[in-house]
Length: 568
Image (tube, rainbow, N blue to C red):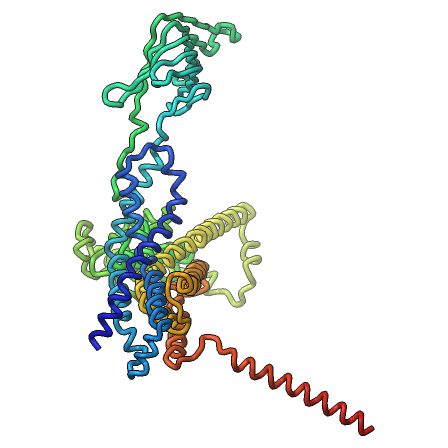
């Protein structure tokens, strides 16, 4: 049996490496087209482009591994079945599952590699790729002085060259528009018959030395009635203009500026991001509830302390936390109340991350007791009011307002309208922000579970590809690639569909992340069962038998009709 494992390992490793390289290259070329416009014409070095491609290749590993496993498993079992080696194994009492045991081991190792890569390597690679692409997108294209073309690469300068020598240094018929002082109403135009251009100080500056030319300066009219409009013309034999080339260089920004993006977070960081978003949702709901309590003192006030007071006030003043993905509130994680929302009670001990902002628990409890005492006093005072004690039947708000003077009625109505507008505005603001925050939460959860799902699908594709190879009995690259691409495209379509359904709040994010595996797992069991029983993937014999029986029944009915007519 060890010889069988060696045979399967040798047969599988070669096609797997080749198909993995091909899948990685195809996926990389597909992604590269998206960034081609940002890279082209920027004068990037070869090593910088290779660095970008290397970062992107790492990010494509979890997607290329399942495709490589699927294609290579179909190829290996297809070759064995095509040369009747699989039939020999079965006749010797070796089952299909025993034959593909080594492939399952390879699939399990690939699943582990996929998860480790998704959780540890890819976040760092995506962080470096994102920061480099941002630097490239901010970089200006390389300076290109073409004759007869107005060049606007330099800020507030437009340059046109009438002609340029083959060495690129000597130029003629030069026209320069200077708009650097346009904000004060001064426009400058420079013309020259000929000149030269070159770079100095190691390429830090671009120098244009012009000969036999004129400089025209026109200023905005400043005299009374707009008649004082000075115009200056200066002739020169030699004029030197120097431009700074620092804006054409690639500036490197700190990678930490992009570290809060979901694609740059590991599973534990995504989970902490979900907890932080849950706290943000709870804080906004608490803010709306306590805003209503200000107009209804009889209602209890929500005094749960989710965050420090300064942070809660900052969140409730308009910061949109839909894009928030950082975590700053403790290492032990938030607790949860009966509704599932995390919270930290007021009297709980602060975590090490919060000790920089200590909370005086005794003072808070004293303040709460004072507020409760005032509320009870106001309630008792309202119950002792003659309007309440002496009332027999409530005649409605209209009769109560009629008992007030006209001026007081106007003041009460205006105050009520103002309060209603304040409550409605607070509710609308909360309702406008909550869907975005919840969508961000769904994306965090979906991305977290997709890291596990992409690893598990490696094993599922082994149980799809190997039995499919045994059924189709075709080796090589042609037919196995066709069969594999069908299943892989189905998996990609299911992944995209589930993401959209989760972001639309149709499916739970956790369920949506696992749904492609849930759908493909029964398919793999059915294909494996069919291959073990030497059954065809699509059994046409039964359909042919039904067709023949239907045709025979029609013939018998026609014969009976003829006999009945002959008797008559």
